[in-house]
Image 1: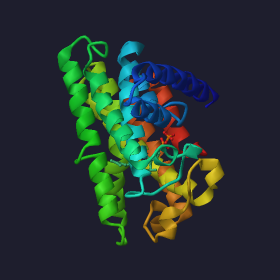
Image 2: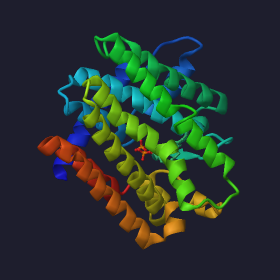
Image 3: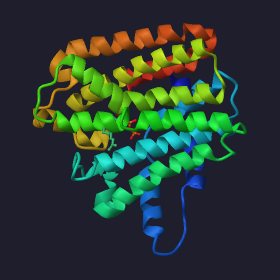
Image 4: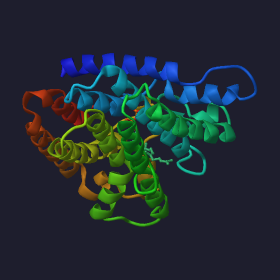
Length: 295
Ligand code: GRG
């Protein structure tokens, strides 16, 4: 696991560098949105999704230059979702990644525009020839990310979540919601590595099953951390769902069963990697990290 920590730190530095180069800078009246986009995506976060892109791509010998650009694109989508999720019209949060949320630091209109800027820039990056020489690969990356981030993926999950605010969801519905809201982006991170590497169908399926399991384990751990940690430890407000009477994996399953379920999913995720033999070790360690993480 110390190996994984070192790998994640190294990858996060490269992702930071890539984002820094890609994100806009400049003067003039539009500079405020550049600043807000940079504020919301630089210098923070675990960079889990780009790490998955990089190490899924590594299975197929993809160049780091390509996978870093794809990783930066998925991180832009993730950061946009956090900026919009924090807005008063959604979760209304003041703190994110240990500092004021984008609309607190700037203002609501700027935060909406910063999210829009990050969302659209992700597709600009993927469709640029520096990401991959083959236009069909670039088109497939755009298609996969659009599907995962859109109304049948993350946006749909967020809508489901908002629409069910005053309902007591059961385990099946919570699982469906989280597969869309959090799972879709985790899945597409792995799939983008496979697309860049023109992976075979069985390899893609193995990654898809792996991603499905770590996506759910990630969300269960998120609920566990929300229940057990402080706002200082997580860098954001905690226990908002419980205060609002919203169902979570922890409220439905209870602490012990939620932990057991997360552990079982990690075990199952690792089993799906057997397709890749020893080459799957890093991704197996990521699965373990997901339930061991403290933030
Ligand atoms: C507003 C379209 C729209 C979507 C929002 C993903 C999402 C949908 C909202 C995020 C709200 C949230 C906190 C969900 C819980 C799971 C999650 C995505 C946590 C944050 O991801 P981490 O832990 O964050 O990878 P870092 O900061 O490490 O990048």
